[in-house]
Image (spheres, rainbow over the protein chains, first blue to last red):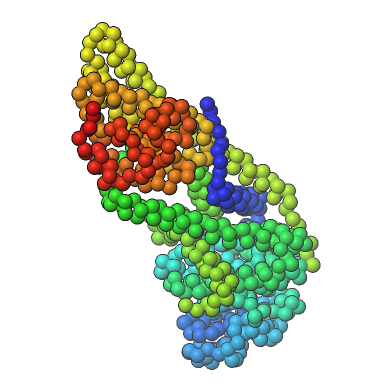
Length: 416
Length: 224
């Protein structure tokens, strides 16, 4: 007897295996995309002539970070006369207005207006842009000195309408920020893969750069969207534009410090994503939109289900076991049970294979993310230990997604 | 308008790689489960060898017209720890989800053997009581894993009894196995439903609580 016969896998088991199948499928897909394209990752493109770039910085009550943001843009390693800044004071009620007033630099234009939201602020400023390229820069984000030099060369292809940068969390302090630091490192890797696979559907607020004429052509940002950066990317796909990513161009960004802040941010993001995919549902399953339409958008729905299932399944098992324990207590009261440390082959689950597999895939992903983001495996710095949070992160991520789905279905106002 | 390409070939290749990863997973699961079953059946085989020796000893003593009590006592005492260990392992395996995923047929064979072993052991405890003026508290428990809500509770009560009265011998027999020996035993005690208990030779149908069982096992043996 070499194998034992295969028995009956119940519906619960089958769904679980199906989820595992999709997870393994995606991991292998991304791994192969990486293997085939890894040489493209760090390519620097030469700059022929330094084109002019305008930075749009919308600011609503950003007194804390705005000066640093403006300074980091002004100090970019790039011909000074080729950089313009338009700072939009979006009806701030704090000292932001004063800060804007005190800016004495002819390269910085300040617009003061009533509070109408980020997308509208960007659009207002976009009308004034006369340079070839335009960057949206969140006021709490700071481009690295060589950001522009690294990113601008990637516009060598005329079809490319927008390029996203690599984002890192600026000085992670709190537990939530440290978790996000890991997440962003992972995102740098994933976003690059998405760009290579032609399915990058988010153009992050901090530091995405656009061809001005293309952006004006499609009408700028959508002020009705919860996530104007995602909506814009979807619209670009719809219009047949190409979106690139450059992992050599870094932008550091501030991040929510508490669970509550992060929860609000993520529910807005994920809800916005849901709304946007429904708004662009004609892209779903449509081969005209390439890998995004045919694979990524449909599989993302499967992922939301998987997240929910993998969250509720252990919860269900835990509650079930707990209730059984309570039941035993009610029948016979508390009893000491003898614990033996002896290993027994019976304790090894047949699913161990998958757990080992997921663990290995996790390690590989972490290593590739570190490689992509230029972080070294250095045990002297604390940062490497943040990867321990990866065991907690899926729970947080699931909670945010489940909340986003629930909030969206019941149209709950996203204010705690 | 950019002409977007679709990596159809990649999707198919990845599908087959994933499929092979899963088939490999099923095979490994099946091999692992085979190891588990082998480990149970090893325990069972070693017990059977032990029983073979002990039974031969008893037969030998009997044929030599010697008192068989010594042989019976050794039989009962030597095999007890091994039987209890196997009982625990079988119970653990049966609770685990894997027992339903792989090797259902193979496990059924092992379990039939194991149940027969228990019955033979129980017969010997009776012989010891008859011949040697020994008193053993024994409980036969007829259960079913299908459509038996009370069996779970009965199991919990019996586990607790075993903890509190370790000298009690509990023989859990699976009615679902449809083993002729179990059926004969059940019939002789007029047992028609699960859960049912036979305590010191007297049958009790339906769920018996811990308190009720304690009362029955601590009561002095009423033998004729």
